[in-house]
Length: 209
Picture 1 (cartoon, one colour):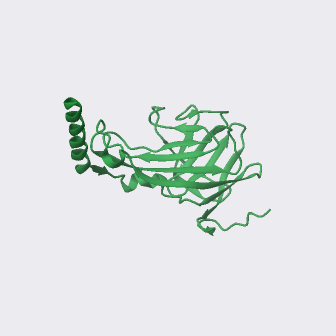
Picture 2 (cartoon, one colour; picture 1 turned 180 degrees about the horizontal axis):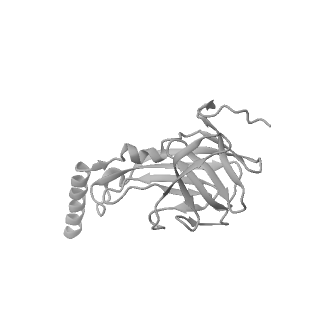
Picture 3 (cartoon, one colour; picture 1 turned 135 degrees about the vertical axis):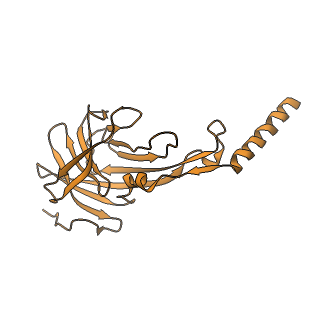
């Protein structure tokens, strides 16, 4: 009984000490830039080389800190800042991986890099040793040239899950997802970007066909 009481008191003291000395480690502005383009409720409209339209909705965007309340004693007193975002397409391309997920969590002891899983195509520093590849690209849909876009490609710097629908996608820090290509050769490129409240943030092209 006495030993149990001492153990409980020790745990309370340790928890109190860790809680009082909790330190939040924040993402830099450059690190946050990976997820800056979108807000919850934004809508992305893409058109393919086959003239098909695909619409993607930003359903969630959350900011958080790991080690909530600083009560994970085995981790320590550090709380790392993170951002997580979910994209839902109108058309599900991959049954078990319909969603797109992008996140970034501060890593004080190593490079802080974003995690991408778009329709089953996943780039993660934990799952592949290859980094994001910078690639200049021009879109036929909006006529824009992106000098500093990043490409994620199956078998190059990404792993594929589910039905292996997606071959590659391009991500731009200013505009987010700008292009994706299916394994069947159909390529979708960004046409329009509607921010929360249905107000155009990008191109005002008429999409009614």
